[in-house]
Amino acid sequence: MRSQLVAPVLARVREAGADAAALARRFGVPADAAGAAEVALPLATLRALLDAAAEASADPFLGLHVAARMPRGAYGVLEYSCRSAPTVREALTRIVRYIALLNELVTITFEEPHGRGAGAGTGVIEQRIAGEPECVGRHGNEFFVATVLGGVRQLTGAPCLAERAWFAHAAPPDTSELEQFLGTSRLRWRAGGNGVALATEVLELPLLTSDPPLLSLLDRTAAQALAGRPAQSRLLGHVRQRIRDSLAEAPPTLEAVASALKMSPRSLQRHLAEEGVSFRALVEDARQELALEYVRDPRRPLGEIAFLLGYTELSPFLRAFKRWTGKTPSGFRAG
Image (cartoon, rainbow, N blue to C red; front, top):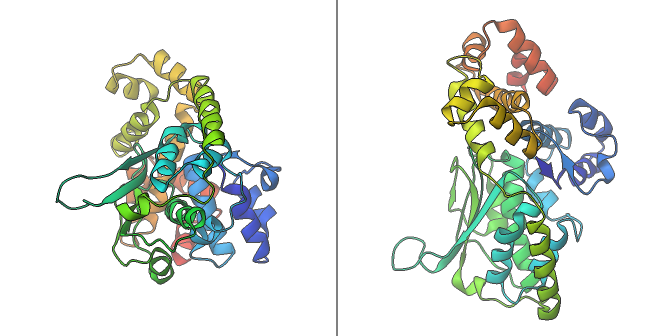
């Protein structure tokens, strides 16, 4: 997936006195990534890179801190369209409308529940990745929520607080700094997505940077850019989920997944190529993501994990895990 996080994260690692270049090499990050506005990496690799960067920089709230340091203009026309909007509500709708300009996997929604039930009187913005219950991993997940709320505060000049927030990852040992930043302890974990609820009064706040003439121009520019891109499909999410579901039964094959999706193997291969990924890379991503999740559970034997990931023997799993993380599973568990 494409990410604007890699360069700022490597900068954070360097500032902490750690070897950012060695970290980049370890995860196969392009040599020019430190100065790149955007870097494309497999989702599982991006998650692992962020985890390793947090460890290298001794920063358990890496996503929170990087969100506060993102350079202006990092998100291009989407960002400037949001800045030029009249209110918080209008800015959030433009994130939803234009997110496909930045990322081919992420889905962002914005809703305002009506009536008297739970959630009434708030607006809810949420980030998800189809077929990826962990979404971008802890630091990427917290980065998203911090970027939304931090952006609202910056553009309104008001000390806005979250009504509640939720995350796709498990609760970390310490949530104090996150709660302090959000202004709420109403946090939910393993929610399948990342989001924040804002009061209607916050949604209606005017932006200090509102510029209606510029907004009109930027909206036209963004719409033209979207029109020039292939239609965004949910295919990748469906393929990822099929791969995850079938790993414990047998090594996933292109033919089996295509059949489950009622497609021919050639058609599936063509669609994946259009998305810029290969079936083999998706299998590797799924194995890496699940491996990290399983190995974190000390009760799971390594042989069982290898089986659940579709390996017929333990040794290929051990080699793969060392390639993904630079550590053995036992070393990873020991921290």
